[in-house]
Length: 166
Image (cartoon, rainbow, N blue to C red):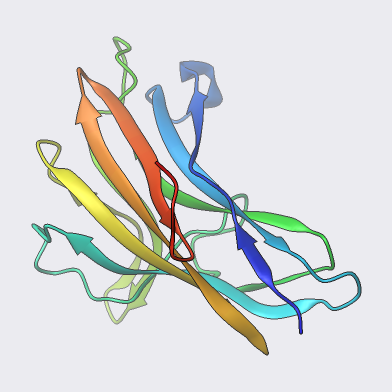
């Protein structure tokens, strides 16, 4: 049976020259298809909860944004031994032109259009529970802590598939 492996949170940043109108930092995790021969179909990551939930308008599960894809694609296929990333959060990087908000990139659409990211208050310390699933494959889960410390977004993986990371 094919399987998935979730990696730990990884940091990335972007300069002003990238054209986003701000600098910033973000975090993502990678998912690997462990199969030697089977492509996984309908691979998706969903935020199951954020605690504390200070954004009462959030509806869970919330599909996570797949790195390097558009903000309307909630699932994809994953070839054998291939890796794909899912964005966790973006936020400030201490720069003069830094992004100020803490944003959760997502794929949320409805009768009022698409929302590529949900802002959450910057003063909190949040625990995010995520499930990654695919057709005909056992789901895996992870818990991530997100917060802003001294004007810098921070994120750590706390647990992956039942195993404490820290």
